[in-house]
Image (tube, rainbow, N blue to C red):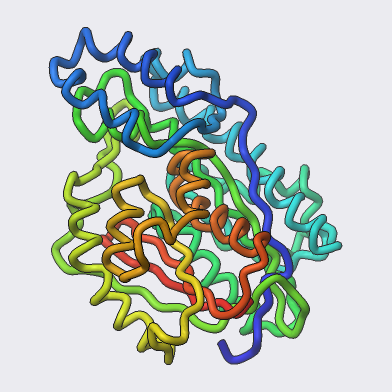
Length: 348
């Protein structure tokens, strides 16, 4: 960054419905086991995710009824705008700012289609100025929180003194499909939660942390690992079963390059802050980065309390790490479709 950019505030937000993992697993068994002969073989995934509870924008019965794309989109627009406002208002309040103080807003979301985008739909409710700069970002998946933070920091650095608001909103549960009889859909039903996170960034300001740099690595010929499969009823998840194995084998080498491009080495890092895609992914990251088993404690706690919310999840972890008083250099990272590792260096 050409000018120091501070994360002035950081906030997370959850939707109103909370599900216990035990309740989700029994409901899934009731609905899917009679239609999908492989379900019982896959059922242990509900116990092995490391999730205790998670939150969603709709009540549980909604997810186990077949829905059309317009119905899923309506839920995304209503729930997405509500969560956008909840997270944004919390971050602005913590920063001591009003929505009218915001010069640019970066909105990251890949779990629904909205044109006009979520920040435009929230403008009147939030009280944004008419001359606010809007940057909606789609398609980054789980890497969106980290890449979005990096993008917001670059925008703040390019316009010193401006207030940049980042809002990351994902409603992953809307992709759970009772009509889709695949391993990936069962895993998604066991993993996904909804959530949002927001941050206020500004140059030459006091804050919780300072964004020092950012970098990305995309592996070739990996489009099939993660993403959306779109059909007439909406998004269907693409999850390759090899993601933990891939992360354990490949992430360290990629991190070598990510750190080098930011002028860092492993010895410069006081805490890696990782997106917890699932219990096996956390274990794979600990092994790949030689962190020791159990090192990613806050990652496990967020996964247990919220599930995998895609892009906001890494920012939920960062919020906990900072609240715990962690100081020094933090490296925030996430893996997303592409298949891509996104990374940001922070000084806390």
